Length: 326
Ligand code: AMP
Ligand code: TRP
Image (cartoon, rainbow, N blue to C red):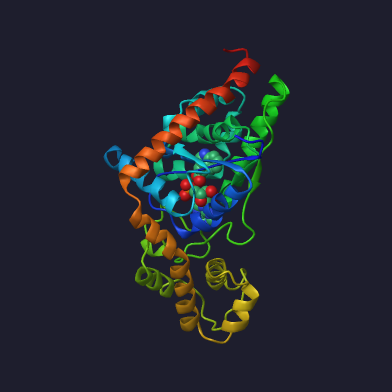
């Protein structure tokens, strides 16, 4: 590795990736490859904190790895692997858990939401400690994620500071990287809740591998309002503002120029144009998905794990030494 700054991020293999994931996180995963040494994970250990089906888990892990590659993560430049293949994540999580307060974990919004939905377990409570370990293991400087990870990143920073204070300066304090537009893409069916993999309504999200017809159908049925003018106004017109953000990101045009063109066009025309831009933007991802085989994915992931194990072992040595182990 060179002395460029490092980036780490992860995504859970729970359901298909949607355009919220893409805009909030993946676009940055891809663009940051230019300037940083990037390490990306399919965080399968995290996904086990809610009930899941072990018989489909393997296929889901492979599918997600393929989507990450299709979305533009170049495994010749960036390190990509399954979190569970490198046991150092769990080892560091244990060390960090000894300096993390339970109260802070119990206050995490995601813990409250998920434990209400899926039931409590110790893994779900300590989820953010494992995430902190993912990030701190490689002493990274930047973490590209969506808005919903803000609390987890704050906890990571707190834990890093506490560790440095107690055991000596080991960890840099990582920065959260979120996009200016699209850090929180909202559900197409309810513009007041975020687009989510776990929403039972499939029309609420557009998947990265949806075809143009499916995209058009979902955008047409997107919930808007009873006015007829296209304006960017989250207070009054959340549904339209959400579509404007999607349209802007996928077309590369500014929101102002879209508003100028579509202000009086009517929602029907606006929605068709937005759907076309989204479909066009996703076409390369869909094409690459079709061209990557499962066998290729498995061998790339195995190679990634091998490189990562060695790197993680090097990284763990000074950490173990700092806490009096090793
Ligand atoms: P997850 O689906 O929770 O594994 O999230 C993977 C990445 O996508 C994380 O960085 C999230 O912050 C991001 N993300 C998830 N949902 C959204 C959304 N609706 N808008 C923007 N980013 C999102
Ligand atoms: N918690 C993140 C999510 O739900 C996934 C994740 C796990 C992650 N470890 C990470 C993201 C480390 C960034 C860095 O989306």
